[in-house]
Length: 231
Length: 316
Ligand SMILES: Nc1ncnc2c1ncn2[C@@H]1O[C@H](COP(=O)(O)OP(=O)(O)OP(=O)(O)O)[C@@H](O)[C@H]1O
Ligand SMILES: [Mg+2]
Image (cartoon, rainbow over all chains, first blue to last red; front, side, top):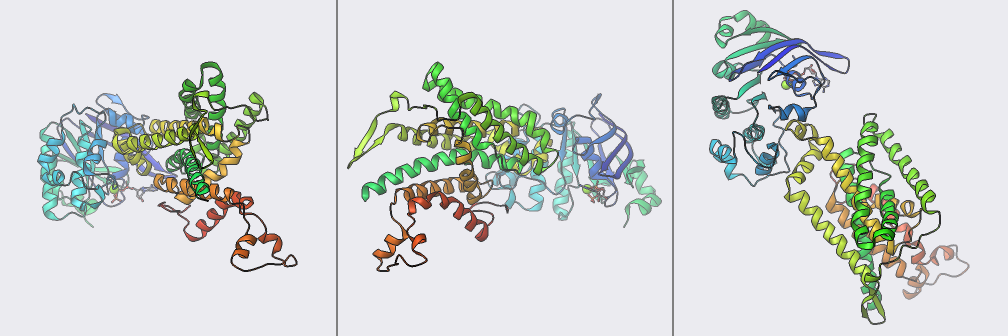
C-alpha cells in the first residue's frame, strides 16, 4: 500500500529526516513512535508533499515523490494534521464539506456515518468549528479527512492532550476506520493506544527508524523503550 | 438644500458602490497573496477601454459582459505566468511587479488609444432622465450603475457564503496548506479568485467609464483612493470595504457639492477673520477644493488610531 524508502527531508539547512524506510500494508494500523522532535510529523508531511521529500515513496504502486499535496490527496492518501487544524470560522458541516473532493459524495463515508459515529457532531452541525472542545475538534479533523474517502489515512498525535475518555473514543474510531478496510499510519508519542490497537509499529530516533516490530515485540524490549521512548 | 442632499446622496452611493467593486477584488486578492496589487486600478481602466472598443464592434450590451471576461482572462494570465513566479521571491518583488505592470498597462493604453480622453458615451438605451425632482433630473445610467453594483455585491456574497467553491476560498485564505492536503488545488483557486477580482474591476470600469472621463490617467487617479478604502475598511475584510467605499463615496460627493469655505462657516458662527490675519488664506479655501484630500486625511488618521482598519483582523 505505502512503501517509503530512504526518505530524506530538510528544513533549510537542517537535515531532519536521514533515510527513513517503512511500509504500511493494506488494512494495517501502523504506529510511528518517538520522542519530541525526532521527525515523526516531518515524515508524514514529506509523504504529503508539504515538506519537499527526497527518496522514494510508492503509494499503490505509484511513485508520488514530486507530486503536489492536492495531487497526492487525490490519489487516496488522507492526512489529519496535528493541533486539530480545523477551519474555526466555518461550521462543523462546512468543515466536513471541505473534506469532500467533489460535490457528490460517492465514497465509503457519508454525513450520516459521521453523525452516527459522533452524535455530538450532529448536534453541533451548524456551530462554528472554533467553539468546539479539543476532543470534538479532533473528531472533526478525522471525520473531515474521511469525507475525502482515503485508502490510507495518516493521523498526527490524535490523543495529545485529550482526557482518557476521549482517548478511548479516538481509539474506537480508529478501529472502526480500519474495519472498513482503510489502512492507518498513526503518529504517537505515548505508547498507550499504539500498543492497544496497532498491528505493527516503528520507533524513530534522530531522523531514522530505530526499531520495527509488533506491539508484543516492543513490550518485551525494555532496552528500546528506555533508550528511544521514555522520558 | 433638500435637492442638494438627495442628489449628493444618490451620487455618493453610486460612486461608493463603484469604489466597492474595485476594493472588493483588491481586498480578496490581498487576503490571498498578502500583497496589495498596484495594477488593480489598471484593470479597471482596461475595462473601460475594452468596453469602448468591443462596444464599437458588437454593441454595448455584449461588451458589458465581454470586456470584463477579457480582462479577467488577462488577470488569470498575470497570476499564472507572472505573480505566481515572483511570489516565491517574497513580497517586495511582488509589489514591484504589480507596480511595473500598472505602468506597462498605462503605456499600452496610450499606444492603443492615445493620451486624450476617448468618447466613451452612455449607450442610447440608458441615456434619458429617469426622473426629475425639483429642478434636477436623474440620469438612467446612474440607476443602472447602482443596479449592476448591487447585483454584483449580492452575487459575490452568495458565491462566497453559499457555494462549495466559496467555502474553499474562505478556508484557503487562512489555511492554504490544510486545504491543499484535503485534495483541493489551491493555486488554481487563487488564480480564479485573481481573475474574478480583475473581472470585477473591469466591470466597474465598463460602467464607470460613463461617469468618469476615460483617459490613460484614470487608473492613476482612482487607484490611490481604492487603496485608501481597502486600508480604512481593514485589509482582507469585504464588509469593511463596503462601509469604507460608501463612506468615502458619500463624503467626497458632498464635499464637492459644498461651495463654501471655512471662512463662510465661521462667519455664520459669528467669528470673523480679517484679511490681514495669517489664517485668512487657509480659511478661505473652499471645501470643494479640499475634497480630494479627504480620503488621504482619513487614511492617515485611521493608520494612527486603528491600524488594522474598521473591520480588519491584521495590522497593516
Ligand atoms: N517549520 C520548521 N522549520 C524548521 N525546523 C522545523 C520546522 N518544523 C519542525 N522543525 C524541526 O524539525 C525537527 C522534527 O520536527 P517534527 O515536527 O517532525 O517532530 P515530531 O517528531 O513530530 O515531534 P513533535 O510533534 O513532538 O514536536 C524538530 O527538531 C523541529 O524543531
Ligand atoms: Mg509532531
